Length: 63
Length: 393
Ligand code: HEM
Ligand code: SF4
Picture 1 (spheres, chains in turn yellow, green):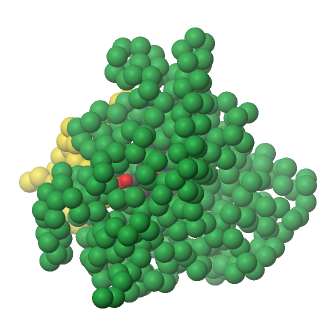
Picture 2 (cartoon, rainbow over the protein chains, first blue to last red; picture 1 turned 120 degrees about the vertical axis):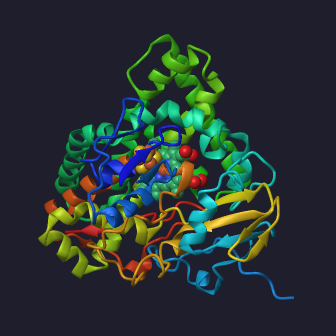
């Protein structure tokens, strides 16, 4: 699975950066940037929980 | 006919939800101070459902259907900024500010916050016990930080702290809150005009240059945004720091756990945020008919999302009434959820971590100088917390 981010929805709360600073960053404008989209097998639950914290539903997992 | 239960209700203990909320159903009708009947949403899943759907549940605070949880909300209908707007209007204003509130930017403020906190504790130690931690510690930390961030002179703090209190306190009357809003607007309008002549290097100066200068915002719009940032930026966090001290002192086993492992500080702050629910509840109104947990909500109905109970929902948080510094749960709704989720949340986290961590490290014998039951609790319908916090060490 891969993480997909929609900058059009992001409102810069930074929940993703707090949860996984190795995976997410924020651009100069304060919008999400995915540093590494690969979700290793077995880690899907952890990432679903992280994605669920995003208040603007900007993040999803894709096959 | 029996009267509906009221919302909001005063807390009996400053860090526990009002006991009367226990009688509410997950979604049920309640009565506001002015007699209006609105839906109270107390469950965590239902709270998120409402907050994630601004298309159905509007934040338009100017609209007559927007429910006033206390008289001050009637005066707030004259203030228009993004906390009280729906997308897409909301999004345009919020995006103007995002670059100043990223995790990286707020982390860069940490050394400055640390210096500030250390200086205030030096003064508290020099004066000796008893200290009132509200004016001596909890209020100046966020107040100085938001002043420096915005470019507002801290020398004016007595004025804007007083006026801010009048606009966030549940018991403030309509006249008092209208006067306080008018005074804050006049003050900020004057400040912004001065900055237009002599630019400084705060966020307000950036917004003047990037938005007012280019037609992105009018000066009046910037005044209303500045008002939101100044008020939201200090009163809430000040309450959270003071009540955080109380909550930790009243849970000595949890305080001991935190002391023995300072790496727990971020999760402890997260748990404080969940447990205390400084913002007791937030309002919306339905713009269309909708189903909410089996109830038929009609267009025009008011809705209040009760943060204090959503954060204690056993479906979302096991043993919800327990205060556990190692819980490690961040899905509370203390900063709201959805597009309006607090823009200052990472700044608030940084201030709480540094203020609480440093205070308990430097004053290891810290204790209340008055019984918990005798601490004056903030009124229902506003930011929650304590008015005074006398301590000794
Ligand atoms: C512990 C401290 C804080 C708490 C509990 C808190 C709580 C909240 C809540 C519940 C909301 C959502 C309101 C809604 O959905 O209608 C919110 C929004 C907001 N907060 Fe905070 N806040 C805190 C600190 C701060 C700080 C330090 C700032 C600094 C500037 C700030 C600025 C804002 C702004 C501008 C909004 C509106 C965001 C929007 O509508 O998009 N808050 N806050
Ligand atoms: S959590 Fe969501 S809204 Fe917040 S920065 Fe990440 S993607 Fe954007």
